[in-house]
Length: 126
Image 1 (spheres, rainbow, N blue to C red):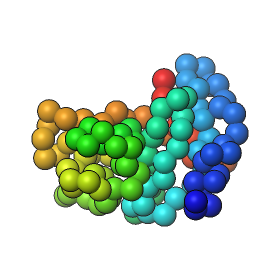
Image 2: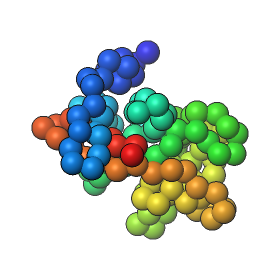
Image 3: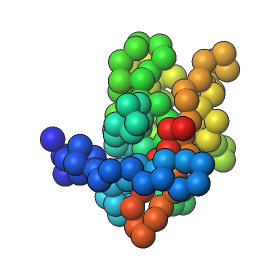
Image 4: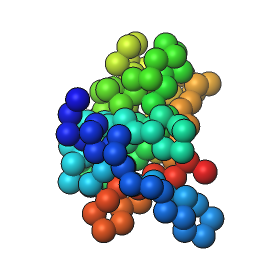
């Protein structure tokens, strides 16, 4: 188990702000650009990514094609200006912005809002 996976498992209790509950996932400096980490947020498995330009995205960790929870282990990159993650199983590419499959627009991953508070990445699944 990596240090990031250990931190994710021991993440502090979620904080509520107005209309959302935000769950701390890890330090923003722990995220290596274009490498994902998995986290359990509000009962949902999410895959969190940081792009080379510093943006942070969270999508569902379940690959809709294989059913395996492996998106955090996918291959991240860009097509044009669109950041994406490709499934490690069959290599279908999903937009990190919209969740829509770039190879098959009928398929999509759920996307979740992210924010960084005092250097900590937070995700909301509401």
